[in-house]
Amino acid sequence: MGAMRYVHVSASGKINPALYVGDVREDGYHDLDIFFESLDIFDEIEARAVEGGEVSIVMQGAAGGVPCDDTNLAVRAARLLQERYGVTQGVELTITKRIPVAGGMAGGSADAAGALLACNELWELGLGRDELMELGAELGADVPFCLLGSLARASGKGEVLHSIQPGYLHFWTLLTFPEGLSTPEVFKRLDALREERGVHNSLEATREAADTLEELLGQPDNSAFAPYMANDLTEAVCALRPELGEILERISDMGLARIVSGAGPTIAILSEDYETANAVANHLIETVPEATIKRANGPAAGAHLRHSE
Ligand code: C5P
Image 1 (tube, rainbow, N blue to C red):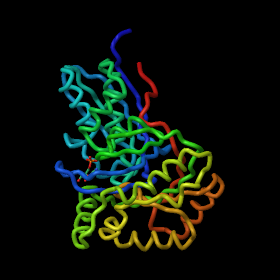
Image 2: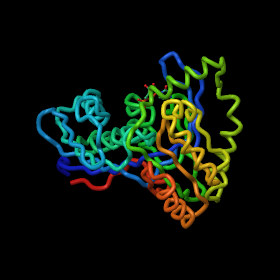
Image 3: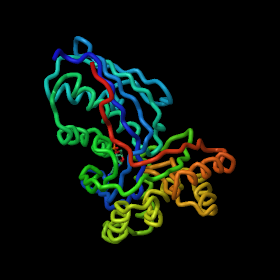
Image 4: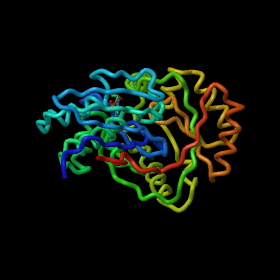
């Protein structure tokens, strides 16, 4: 078989059914006890081989605010593979964005995961998923999960993963907002809030709830885990974006189970079945006009190959 010229990968966005934040580590990251679920919202990553070592990128779709320079996480992923494996070929990346940017849904990490997978194919490096996940951890804490996909729980900074065999499908309604939040800023705000109060979380206090969540996620039920959804970053997110706290309250008053995903501002609402989720989405279009409402189901596949030639 001759060398690949073109590879197309789809990479899913995620939400976090729960996100517990522990103490700050020496490397500046926080220890986490974190759950990931891939959703059926995909970015498309297309990679075309070019002679010479250049890595270039074109972003299309809902990509407002994503840089096309060396700071783009997909570009960094391609460069990392080049450096580590002495690749002399280059790549032209085209990314079609559907995952909300800076929304707490790992859009940038999904693109990095997609670029790793696509370039591994394109340059015929023959790396397995575990090797790609290890490289991915160097790029960002969410990248390994974006390669793994489906449903998982992680410790460390989010890279020490184990899969959870999903019970049933989950029917989510997402509220996304035009303006993103900076993940480092959200973590910093949480540190400040905790310091103010002299509290911290060793992750011991929340372990039991997290263990229960893990058990419920594996059971054949669409929404039994709803009471165990939690996100330690919520308060920091609301401190930085006060109107979000008000919206969360409005949603709770409707009797809906909701969480902030990752470092926000995306809000995810869980419904017990498909029809209810669609009805909730329609209702929210009227009642929360400041958000964009999307339906999504999970768990979905992580980054995967669609086509190559
Ligand atoms: O690894 P990633 O680039 O996705 O993380 C973005 C930022 O989020 C980090 O620079 C850090 O400030 C914060 N973070 C953290 N602890 C984690 C994951 C992320 O403090 N476990």
